[in-house]
Length: 154
Image (spheres, helix red, strand yellow):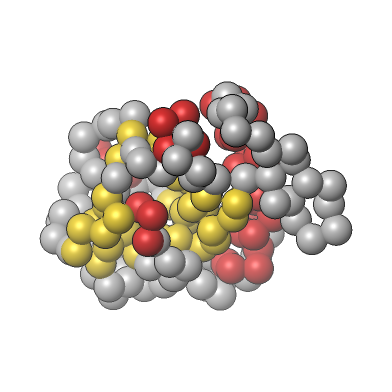
């Protein structure tokens, strides 16, 4: 993700002001359960993001880390070559993989949730450095959260 490509709703909440205080964290080191304040400037690629304690205002939370092509348990894996498969292919994979992880983290099916998800995905540039990681993020429509959404049934 040497410059993780932003996708989906990642910056939906950015028009609302959230204190950007927090620890700048490499997108390569994001862990499940970390709460984040997304950048206010829209960029095609990012290398770091502000992580904050979940008790502080935030609009995103890491809920899964998946590897492109790994597939869910029991599924046929996607062929992963050295050439970047293209943004549409990576986005399709990320959408399915993140959706599959949503309910086990939040505690309710995505269609019944008030939350949304988005993801950070490899860019064509980071792909050439063997980056295949997709970081799945819970997000809101801009309202701030002040607690983890894990098991919240929101």
